[in-house]
Length: 150
Image (tube, rainbow, N blue to C red; front, side, top):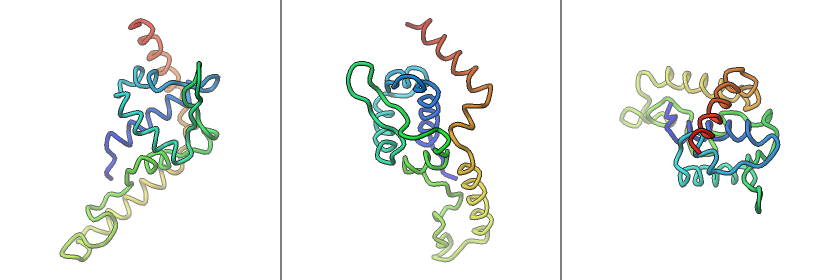
């Protein structure tokens, strides 16, 4: 599976947004500060997430971003795919041309792993992660750390 920092940061940022935007929109600056992610990198990710219909921008004072639909209806796999990450463990991208234009010996093994990973990430929504007690604890610690920093 080729899950790079792009996919990890997108999931982290979306989870931060889901947690903090329950009352008001959240700025990318706030997410960048809490999650220690470059603001310019977040802007690139959110452009893709907006295009995929997962977030909407709110203009004006008190503006920022919010989820465009319920956290129950956004899967982790969907976030990763929206930022152009592939959920694929093969070196051929699933094209079966990994060994002299033919499948390699382990092609089916890696295809099976890719399917398992994809199914797992499709089965988990942002809302499910928010319900985990550790997420709230970590988010509150991040908020406290940021307030101390400012």
